[in-house]
Length: 174
Image 1 (cartoon, one colour):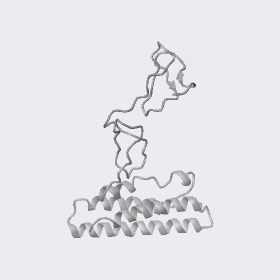
Image 2 (cartoon, rainbow, N blue to C red):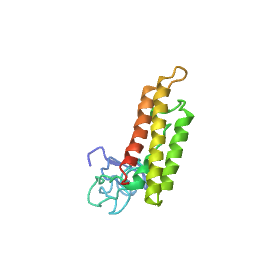
Image 3 (cartoon, rainbow, N blue to C red):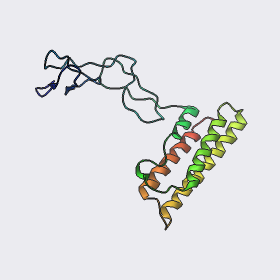
Image 4 (cartoon, rainbow, N blue to C red):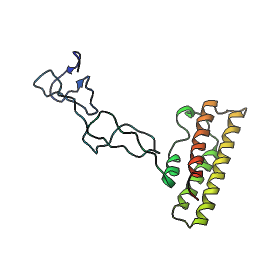
């Protein structure tokens, strides 16, 4: 802690300047903050908003969270569908309805493939891949259209999301 650290209020007020990943509060008795504390081993760690990463757990011995491991198999594919196509660079833009419809339909096919016999699973995953390809081509056309085109940034992000889902789909052992 440095000289600027310390309690700025009374009991239950937040301390200033702690380094630990847990919140530190004043005790109401002194102006000094309590010693930096770490979350206990096994506590949820980090702010990982990637739906395709497994949750990370604190070690209890470090302020650093372990790197989140990626999901595998159908879970890895399904998580790619949990990403929103209309956020970020696409806020306020008119995504072609076909893109969302194809994306949702591809996800439904992947869900159907879970637990299906091998031949049926291959066919469903192939169909899902075809739909993702169609969605990507629809985005490319939307960027080029004259009336209310998608921005290049939105098109790039959306195509990257679709490509990620397709890549995860193709990585599943047939």
